[in-house]
Image 1: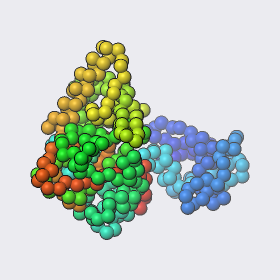
Image 2 (image 1 turned 180 degrees about the vertical axis):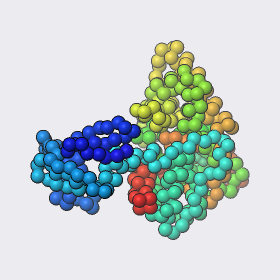
Image 3 (image 1 turned 90 degrees about the horizontal axis):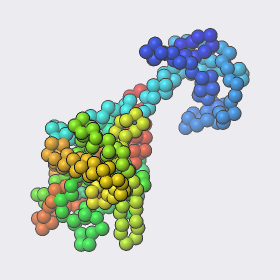
Image 4 (image 1 turned 90 degrees about the vertical axis):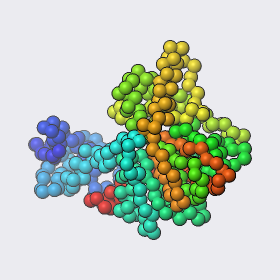
Length: 366
Ligand SMILES: O=C(O)CCC(=O)C(=O)O
Ligand SMILES: [Fe+2]
């Protein structure tokens, strides 16, 4: 990509395709201190008043573009900054390439906690791994005083729910969720009934003395892409039908709907939802539901098959951070009489982790 000039027009040239950059687009981006607060990159004027803006003089000197506009403003632009915006380099997919995985994944992406963790290069690498694989494990995180809250708030901001800022995962009498028993949990995404659905789940292992209770993870995007290749009809119906998810207890009724496989505007995977304890498909025509039920059966058996699942034991101090829009998690059954198993969990949003990742990229990768 190159920025070129032609008769006071600014052109960007990508693979021989030339597009003129609108003069107002450039005028909006003037960074001189009269127009922009350098501390936060916020404009000090309202660009919607700009009208009939032309470029009267344009020059390129090395890495700088100098423009004089017809409203009397002359300014210098860093060409790097312009090209980075034109190429959308702040978009996460341009920083990290996702790697879809199955049971053959050799090593879990793992990082060691340390005192200066949160603004460190380790954190930068951790967040990149997180977006590559959809999860990371952080070892030896302090376990006192609900430290999970500190951890979450040091990446971004915790997302409280009706379960509180964080929740304790242990076997209790009269649980309001199957998670709070010692039963097996098949691969699921958390809380598809929330609006919005929690983006990232953190689970901190405080104690784990039992032989069962192994953590299971499945890369939902890998399974969805497998389904797309092997049974396009099933894939199509799961990306089309919006299913309702519902949570009820004595204090609240939470409801949200979404596709089991949600794609973005470019048909990339955006979010998967799977929680067969609380899904309510609408009463559609019988032939549509015939297909939907077959497709759900198929994707369920893929999610549950050994081919796609990894299984491991969380140890005291481990935090597992996983993308709840991409991965499914579960656990094997355990015997609560063998000893204690105690995890603390909470949610944060992609807003937190992406914001931190961009900040650390700016800090370490410039
Ligand atoms: O007990 C576990 O390992 C996981 C429980 C669970 O699915 C959850 O807390 O969301
Ligand atoms: Fe869960």
